Length: 214
Image (cartoon, rainbow, N blue to C red):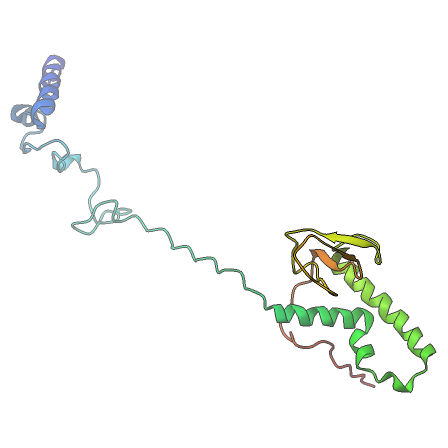
């Protein structure tokens, strides 16, 4: 066994040799590992005894020649791109709204009925039911408010920079805003729209046919 003093000397020499020339002195390597070859720091193993396992030993996985440990790291599974949300067709939403008014207020049945054969009293009674059901559907899925929250028949002023989609000017229109006129209809705008999800099929069905089996 190499004495402590010799090992201390070898340690100092090896330290400065690695620092200056990046190699272990030949005599130090020969004294500690007889038969070993000199190698640079960071190169292959210094001595076969430094290898604690061999390829083929139980529990040891051999590595293909020419590959590093980094090569054997499994690449992370590619993430699937998130598909963009399906853009809903405005036509489908329009038919959905008609279907809701038909379901809750029988609006389409009323509009498609030939009223010429009915008395005014019968029509009036039917209108009450249609009105109540359609109003309930609107309140459930929409919040509505007047575009101009004023009393109809009162004079109003249309200022410059008005939204043409919000206010329709009728009558004898001359010049540019500001304009004075009379409010004939307050208009309506939706401040909340919460329609239910569209069904998977039957987007053009406003009311399904009903068959009673006896």
